[in-house]
Image 1: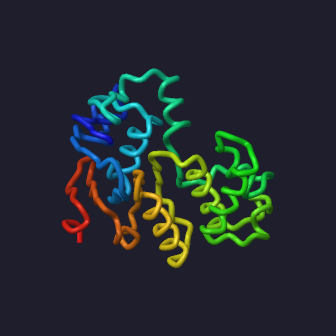
Image 2: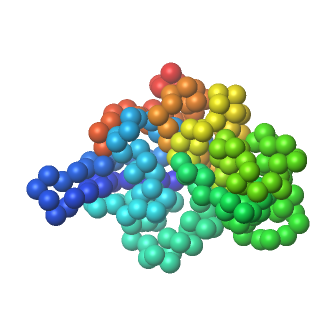
Length: 226
């Protein structure tokens, strides 16, 4: 589904000491499954995810998605792709504080109808929110509850790809593993990319990519990663 060729992201281009977030990496990701991307802070894992999702534009190299060169897309084409085929879970929740949990999920819905609202409620329930919390303002929810609302929002349109940047960072272990089980189930016929520094949540990934200092230090299927 995704392929990168000689992909680099360089900051401080106008200085003598350029900073490489990505250093000419090559990779190919599967069409579906749960992919874990792990590495310490500054390893380039989040930068890679943002380049794949078209939220950042690489300095050098090419990215292909289903055989099409993403790096040649216009801004409008990239925006349409994100809306129609991608879902996002960011490190920050980016919820609207005066809106309820359900309404925050519905913000991303391509259709505003009863069936979609019921679907939003179903996702929130599966992610561990109580029914009484569905219509609480997000400003009244805990950080962990807000993160689960953000995950439901990412899934509401059944996107082909979910990009999740530290999706369990604000969750306790029990809820972190609950979220990972749901993402694993979602990834049965779709692609889910999880960026994290927490190796413990990646025990059930299909592919593990390890990054270090802007490069891919290892990449393999689950049997190779264990």
